[in-house]
Length: 130
View (cartoon, rainbow, N blue to C red):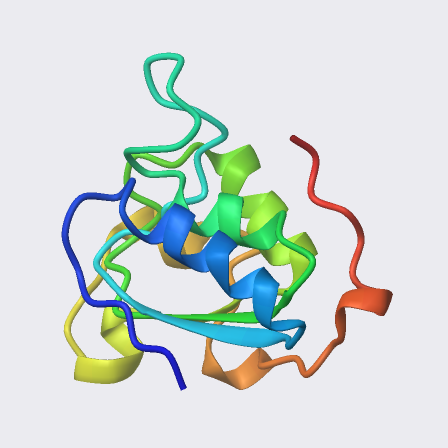
């Protein structure tokens, strides 16, 4: 089981990409205050706030579980909707600590929490728009 630990948002992307050479599929557990599903930030697609979106585009990544988000952060609401459509499972900071998270997180009609965990597989997931 490979473990990648922290740092700049651009670091995990090539590491996750390298796992494709194994021919196996992987699940990603992200523990972070942000969901990192931006399409790009300041015209950069492989850095800040885009790590989980890039992971979702890799055929060997079959599941993404995200723990600790305080809200959708710098991600736009359509990016959050893409994450939900892909099948990412969210366990918010509130879910894990009982503390209040960002008010827009729970106001979103597409926000998923531990009560709606899905075990969908890549073959049943819609493609995430680039």
